[in-house]
Amino acid sequence: MLGVMDTREAQRMADAQELDLVEVSPNADPPVCKIMDYGKFRYEESIKRKLARKNQKEVQTKEIKFHPGVDRNDLDHKVRQIHEFIADGNKVKVTLQYRGRENAHKELGTEVVNNVIAACSDVAVLEQPPKLQGRTLGCMLAPKPVKSAKAARKEHHESEA
Image (cartoon, rainbow, N blue to C red; front, side):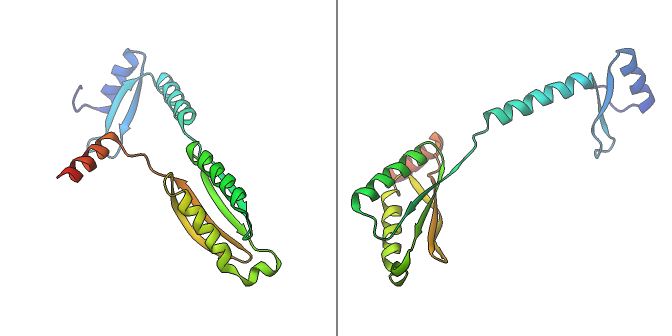
């Protein structure tokens, strides 16, 4: 912290230390500058960006397809698959396709999708409600948001009172 000084004087000080004069905050009045090794600064910033990309969790969307006449065992198997996908942190697109005469009884497909949503309600939250697009009824399930320990304690404390 050298205080307010002339730009030329600051540049001379940076040259004497064989460093760069970098403008940190140009919108401040007066502008804020810093004496640093700019090449080293850019290198460290690139390393931070690479680490941030590396640690970033990429959420994939998995799709599970049904038909209105799906049997109970097949439905249970696909619900288990949805649970596995959700446990891995992925979103799941539930798609039900009507074929031929099934189009006349859309309520059967809606019932199947609602059963799937109900079966997954303990681990997933409905991100997009069931919507009919042509011959396809689809909805989106996402993992339930993880509560922080602080929020869980607060909720527990409120329920006791």
